[in-house]
Length: 365
View 1 (cartoon, one colour):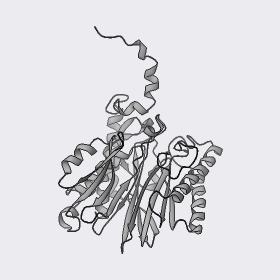
View 2 (cartoon, rainbow, N blue to C red):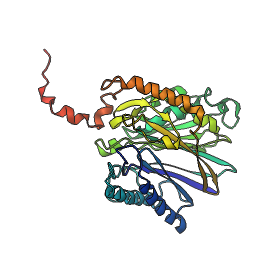
View 3 (cartoon, helix red, strand yellow):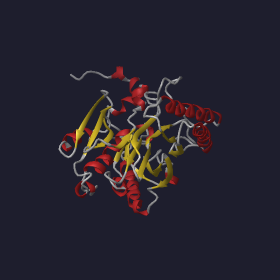
View 4 (cartoon, one colour):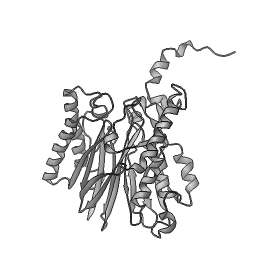
């Protein structure tokens, strides 16, 4: 059967600052989505959380960016926001930038990743959810999954993958997109995605037949709002096995906690720490940035899972490394490279600080 998997998230209120989602918000979301399942709008759902972000995972037979699916997510976030306000949770409704729904949630604040595909005889997928970082955080892991033979053995030994993949890259500043093919355009791809604050991998397709392999959320919340309203906290869906990277190849890039932008006040670089569900509550300097991975097996559109894929001692050293990196980079305090560069700080609260003494500068002779 043809099925669509939608992952839609928003920060609608944090329990003790920006650290986690209150369980009553999740209960509210489950109640609403259960009603939509009984109505037949969605096939199945899961409500999850990563840090202070409420995550809605839904399967259905409609296409991506469907109005009714997005309306359901929007109304769920509004209802959860009301609960957050009643409980005086921090930043209640901060990701909801508009007052009224207008067809889909694109440009309205929440982030989303969706893909539509024909369900295979066995359909394993992994949903990645990150907190305290931006969409470009997926660039390095996606490159390693789908273009690095030192990470993904299937690129060398699996004939279904040997031809490579096509990467759709979005320029989130100039609002442009380009498709690049690997391996022949690998260096061109790296020239772009090595600048993750601007160039973001949106989706990956198998070159041989154009089949969708991975998709991410690319919404830049601060740019949409024109001011600092929290970090983007992206999500990603990756299909595994049978012509795609194996589950272990999809997870392997996260054994290296690479540096990403975000962390405290969305203004600092820090290591992306892979954690189990129970540890996805960043507190140290509001971080360091976290990523969780929820494994699902799809069966006729129904979700079997989630399986906590990072709940594995094999990732303990990655977590230890992330803590060491955090110790090192935190000692820089307000200095770069811990603090983001000037162009990336444009949409934070720093310009308001600089504004007060801009007229005190004198020209050099």
